Length: 244
Length: 101
Image (spheres, rainbow over the protein chains, first blue to last red):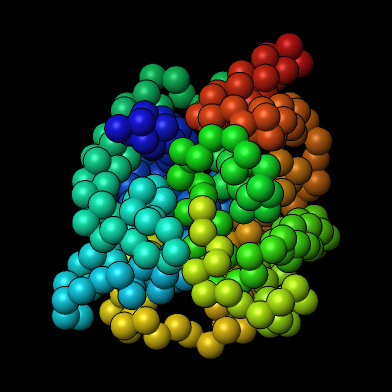
């Protein structure tokens, strides 16, 4: 699987950064039960910047809200009762969303499910290696590893904001899951609102950082998403029109 | 203790968000405005986290080796360098600048 290597590497980065901050066992356990790089890096970066536990949890979960539309996108392709659906839903991850996508809003649920164990094992395994490495290298900042947070997030954000730019290149990045999930049911033409929202959120964060406690600016910036209350100007939704 | 609580909240919250759609499901969608807002929460929070990790230190706004590293990483990503390589490149730039300082 071409996905295994990047997932293991990001898991390792998480372990390197989380080890000194949370301790070895909590870091590994976090990867094992949360199993979401976005949420884990989000929570960790708030803790690293001096924010408290509640703020860290909120930031991590807000960064993960993309799973809501992804779950609703998968739902029509699922069969079985509520319990089976629950279990299949829990197997959802960014990469599986892309792997399972069959176009036209349809998903191959068994592909989604089968992609899960590989991603899970590499993610947790990568974390273990990272945590072990952290005990060797000491302070991550000395090695410039604190830049891993923002660059990891940029790798999620760029395809979200400029899907056509990324699509012109390779299609193998799992980040497209965000785009496919977020864009579902919206317009097939260019939607500039994610860019506007990102700029607004960045401005809010910069403006609030000097005056609000650490972690708070990120949560306030989430309110930039309320721009979505207004219907997009472009046109009526085209079901299944927006597919990778 | 707080760490365990954080882990529990993140784990439960993440599973909830993944499973609400499939369980309620059957092709039913939440109201359109809500869907649009939800789709925009991730870009907003992720953008805010990038800014926090690039330009802030506690309550201070700063530009330093880390900012330069993130800049290099951003350029690399824009030119479709795989994320893992971009992260590595950014860390190297940042570490070298810190070492030189």
